[in-house]
Length: 259
Image (tube, rainbow, N blue to C red; front, top):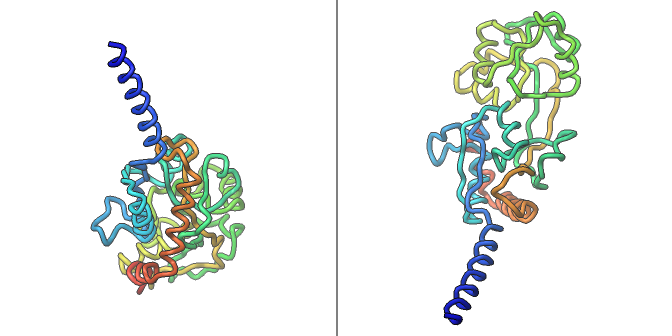
């Protein structure tokens, strides 16, 4: 009996350390399934239409033998998920305060920014935020754009607050159908939807872009599925650097951004 008991103790200890070791390596990570074309396609239509950023991430995460679970989300909800550990990984630009609940990679995935779009037949030149006072403004719920825009929005009376919709595609249709005068939104996604609806010639950017920034992979500090976040990000950065040296990234750009 002593021999059997000793064997069981040893076996139990080995099992504990084995399981403990496995727990350090994620097997599944959670990513918000948000429509943010051409970077992410919600309910991915096909293996070759996952989205520019999603294909890069999928390639590098597969190399670590980790599965991806995508959960439906909107832009506004995505930030909440990351803050509270409901999602593990996403793509964001740097902004004051985000370091408190996010860990950033060092290798950017892409650059994008925000701009003010108007209809091509709208005979006005909106040069800056101060020019919005007499106009009907539309944007996407959850987009912060810039600090001056946030401050301008906070000053507006209830009847003049921006119309905020859940998706760039909806905002595009509001602009085309003259429900708003100015659409303030992400440049590349908005143009992507305009291309899809064949209305690129019907819209234009007014003034200079409000902001251009790099976007990085980010990990939620509250996420439960990636215990060694710094190690995971180092491997991810190395993979992205290698892809940039190859023809992989250029081929992706041709597929997602070529006219």
